[in-house]
Length: 155
Image (cartoon, rainbow, N blue to C red; front, side):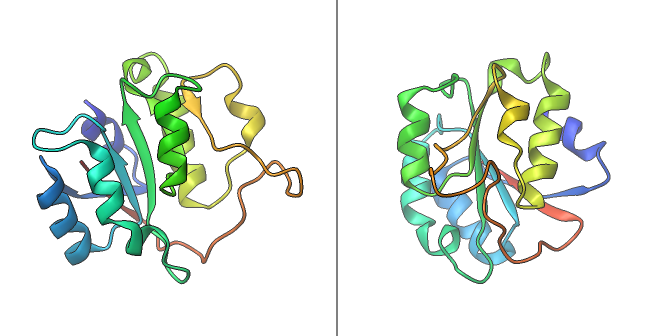
């Protein structure tokens, strides 16, 4: 369902699907997607194994790969989200809300792709964002301009 929802949105191209951590790490090395949608419940290993293995791409200062956790364990303000943010994840979305909040999900994708997430828009929604520093505005800091359309990989 998530794939069809995204494919109907012309701003994004789904460039890969991976069933496990090893396939995902191989795919991102070959494809270099702009955004990765990560479910933490993977077959062989937990999604944090992917985040650990993808640190070089996530922390790349010139072309950082953005990761959004889309998982039923990513309830609003869940501890698993705080842990994911330590790995460089830019947002968490509660997968159980995908149908009821599909517009919120698509808005989050668009904003992450533009490196501009408006925190006030997601109060009370299925989205959890990293804590804002007191020294910065309500926007995530801009990164280098993304290529359009954005390439997405599902894990």
